[in-house]
Length: 448
Image (cartoon, rainbow, N blue to C red; front, side):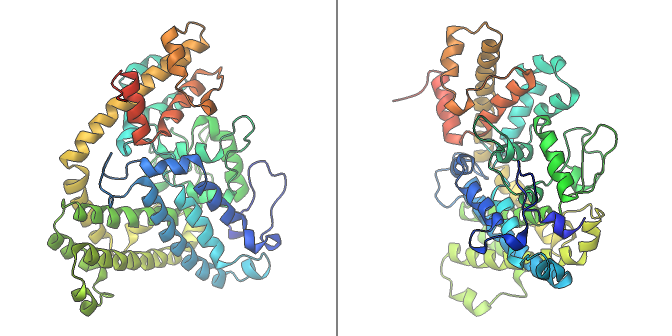
């Protein structure tokens, strides 16, 4: 892979290249990506989607929206720091093509902003609830009517693939979705493969999948335009990662490790003394002990340590990337950056505490159980009504259910797989609150 191709400004539907040297720096294409994402309805819905604590009423607990904004800030720093090193190493990128270090920051920030845009309500249990509706629930009846890869898309419903669809899928009058640059789409794509074969290697890029069968044609087009390296054979589609996807992943890893931990401390699920013991290992080289001693509240002390910890992890991630840049360009780096961090052991310890004290706390489990019931009920009612309408045997109840679908989801789909995926897509874009409200309406429990 080479950086000139990887930094492609081309957008879906373009018939020719967009040259960086011809760009207006006051309205750079990569920055347009960020703007289009932040103004999208799908991004707005993240304000009421679970990060850790579902349906939380506590104002300092992070939602998917605040998490995504924070990941984009960390991603921008990672991108700029790496970009500075890359431009120094390959001066022709600036001298001939007009690229700047900030371009790397803009790409990674935009991809980081969008990294959770396809996640369903109620956190990762939302993905599992959709998948299990098909694998062990009422949706199992459709298995024999679908191809193996179509079926795998549904039973392993994946927020990353759904996000790619949100960013790129066309609908009447809206060709190419948000029309994001190929470079940003490449950085967004942590798992550049289809749902089968499942986990064919230990390569980090094979851990999950990154696009549905409906989006395969355009994904291949963008991947080939950027010069991504194919790594599958026969009819299977898969590529080595775009190098900047490693930075998006690192930004997410850094934020959820440190900031979810901070949420747990502020909620009282992790004691401050216990937290200090673990965070101090990340900040011992940068902490100003005299300043720390002047902070009088737990929130301020933890906030200070969190900022220092994130700074330490950013600098280390940049070092790992630059040390392995040639291997990454050659598709020979099958790890996450933070797996090779000198702080890996400390991060693993913090994540272990978060799993035990936060993610598996009774309050989270209770809300995830509610989320399962809500999502599977909505899928069943809307899929049944949508399919019955297509087959010409919709009941009056089905017609009423379909009137609850937003106007933009009123599309005729002749293909069963597309109909099923269409309803999954609709449910996935609901906020936690919207999903709960729809569920209560359908169950006749809604209160005025």
